[in-house]
Length: 148
Image 1: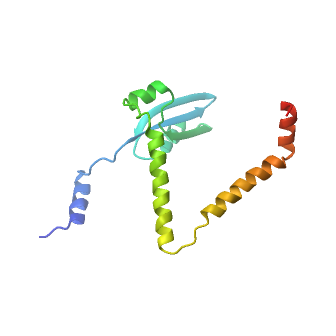
Image 2 (image 1 turned 60 degrees about the horizontal axis):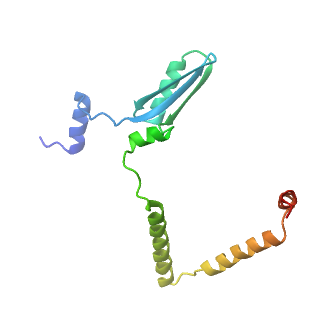
Image 3 (image 1 turned 45 degrees about the vertical axis):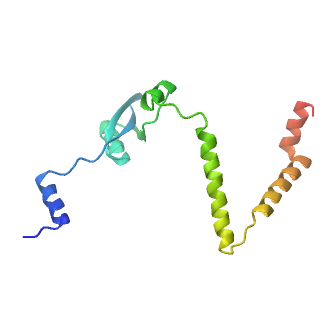
C-alpha cells in the first residue's frame, strides 16, 4: 500500500505522534474582584493565552487580557539579547534602506514610469516655508510665550 505524506501525517495525528506546536511567551493579566493577577507562560497562540485568562476569570466579572512578552526593563532585555548592537547598526540600516530606495527608483525610471520625487520634495519645502511664515494660532501662542 502506497501512503502519501498527507496520509502519513493523518495517521501520525491519530496515533498522537504530532509535533507539539511551538509555544511563545505571553503575559496574561486578569482583574477579578478588584484583584489583579498577572502571569507569564508559554502558549501556542494569542487566542490560547486569552482563553487561559478567561478560564481563570471563571464566573466572576472582570477583565482578561493577553499580550506577547516584551522586555520591561533594560536588564531583562540584556538577559534575552546578551550581544549588544553594533554601534553603527542604525546608520548602516538607514544606508541600506536608502540604497534600496535608489535602486527601486532607478528600476521605475528604466521602465518609463513617472518620477515625481523632486516635485514632492519641493512641495514639502514649500509647506515648511508656508508653515513658518504664516503660523497658526497655536504656533503664534507658542512664539508669544517664548518671547519670539
